[in-house]
Image (tube, rainbow, N blue to C red; front, side):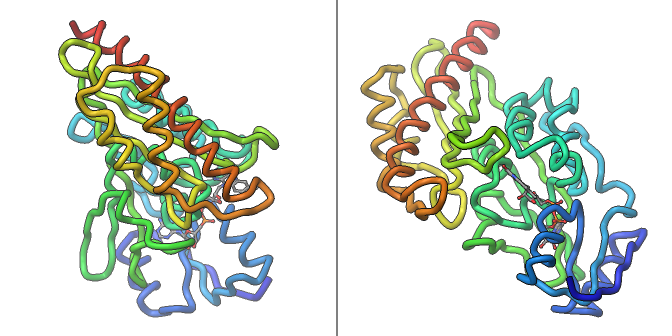
Length: 295
Ligand SMILES: Cc1cc2nc3c(=O)[nH]c(=O)nc-3n(C[C@H](O)[C@H](O)[C@H](O)COP(=O)(O)OP(=O)(O)OC[C@H]3O[C@@H](n4cnc5c(N)ncnc54)[C@H](O)[C@@H]3O)c2cc1C
């Protein structure tokens, strides 16, 4: 690993100033689970690391507009075990539970999972399906983006030089909604997904027909993506095997997986269709239970 200087500023403004001063030479470090590996492999060689760990307020999970705001420094394990997240958005806790091992989840942070922009990660998939927004701060001020628009290319996000992720705001599910996260990983339980799908289904007042659905997939292209064609097929429909199959078939044209040691592109395309059907059927069942509870 190359030699580097290390700064642990106590305020966000200070961190932004250090990033501005050192430009391309500087890199933010949060949990370090991805960055240190990349440095060891000499994929990146920053001369300056700016830790966010000493900045108060970035490690909080709190209620925001009925949903939940999660600070950038909150670890995966904290999301997984948070009583607030488990009560309000259980599918999010479940998604973070599926990441790697406890050792990794204890270190990796929510901001790191977004900024790293690895298309094989779990959290972005569910955050997109839930309609979450990422908070960004730079020297010029703050901005917010739908997580869906945050990923630009393979390991590339919408972050401009000198900007940091400060948190993510996750809205609460509408009434009569159900959610599911399905991670297909045939190798080992702590692996990255071969294909991952998050689905949210919201039912009409009859508790049967779909009012709206949101479906997102991971590990099927250079960024996580939304399956809009499949979503459109579901509006107004009742759950049935034919519908699930049609929704699954429709994602085959939307995904563009890479062949790797987890499977060929053709295999992943087939599995994406299967997993979309599985996630939708679980989300639909959960939505029915929710609708029964609210009727
Ligand atoms: C062995 C292993 C297995 C894993 N398996 C999975 C898995 O199955 N599923 C999964 O989803 N994840 C998995 N991960 C975790 C994931 O790949 C990333 O390592 C993790 O999410 C990065 O978070 P971090 O806080 O450690 O980021 P860091 O390593 O600290 O940083 C990663 C990148 O993000 C930047 N960065 C970090 N925080 C910010 C911020 N707030 N603002 C701006 N830029 C920032 C850094 O500069 C760096 O470029 C695994 C990791 C390892 C090491």
